[in-house]
Length: 211
Image (cartoon, rainbow, N blue to C red):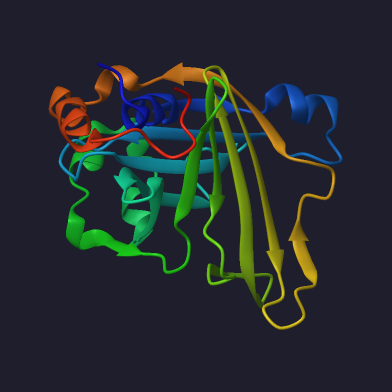
């Protein structure tokens, strides 16, 4: 039996590139690589995320551990920072270093939970309301407004930073979302034990799920 949580984790487990968009619109979009791989040694649904510029994939500008789960009100994705993250740069392609990431290395990012719902063939996720997901960028603190659209063969994301006091837009795409195409499928790395655990926690139909 396929559950919404197992489908979400399968769709997230992959590599993505916006090469076509970047080549068509070089002034507006950098060429970015996004890769997510399961971390079997951690809690079910845990995925290593590395996001990098294609010109320097060995130095990701964002590395996180995401954890998808079924909460009381539906699907959510926890967003976790990694202590001394440079130790794990490139771990997405290095099984030994990837396997050495431990729960003690992780720090939950307050206010940065993604609330996810099924939509059509895929999922839509947005940072939880409350303007509490604070990030430092260009010397200023901003709260993050982020949206993710995930489909079987592509992913669209948009991140924007706003001033916590005035709500002024500080940074982020004004031209529209980044449009990524799937380049790799890592869903075969999802442990069978995770899929069995997802079935046990399914319980009842999710709010907003298709009948």
